[in-house]
Amino acid sequence: MRVQTGENVLIGGFIIMGTDAKKVIIRGIGPSLAQFFNGALPDPTLELYQGNTLLMMNDNWKTRADGSSQQAEVQATGIPPTNDLESAIVQTLPPGAYTAILRGKGDTTGIGVVESYDLNQAANSRLANIATRGFVDTGDNVMIGGLIVGPAGGPSTKVVLRAIGPSLTNFGIAGALQDPMLELHDGNGNTIASNDNWKTRPDGSSQQAEVEATGLQPSDDRESVLVQTVAPGNYTAIVRGKNNGTGVGLVEVYNLQ
Image (cartoon, rainbow, N blue to C red):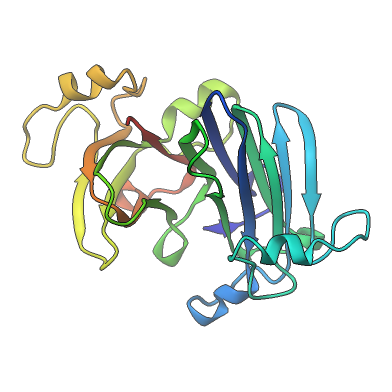
């Protein structure tokens, strides 16, 4: 999504559940997006927090904040960024909730991506939730959340996707998106499902009981939810404002299995 300044930077969250620590890589991507989008973020910086505690920060992925090299460690993950100006953090984290903040260096703006990858799927823990908060604009600058279900050839997974907007006002966030709409696309770009107001499907039937059974129902009727069982693969969740509305929004994915 488009990374702005102040409270409208790109904020990614994830939750690790289980008993084991999990090794992850978090990436802040910007300039390499220029091959896909106009106005890519030219120089992203990345911060990792647990609560209000800053665990680590990174500017250019080959070098740590203290000036030492982390190039070999990042390359060993198999997914180093392709541009030296992009950011990466490799950490082994105990179960808990974490936040990654992507900014433009020198308060620059542009389209950026924040990502988290599970580097140890054998651990007795899992990425149970991923979320992204930022400013939902129009056109190419809507909010786009991606998820990968794996491993390839493995079982299907039940997930809940939520698009949150008006209830963010309750947390002191100014300019919340007033009526978010949510779409889920497969790896080929095909639309699998969509939702406007969470209690009702597009065909007018009710999904209120199904959503409430997950315990993840939104607090505002205008917010959107999809409950889906998905096969291994790549998926994209798109959040837009109804009637081209704009504002701060949140897209979330919960792994129920």
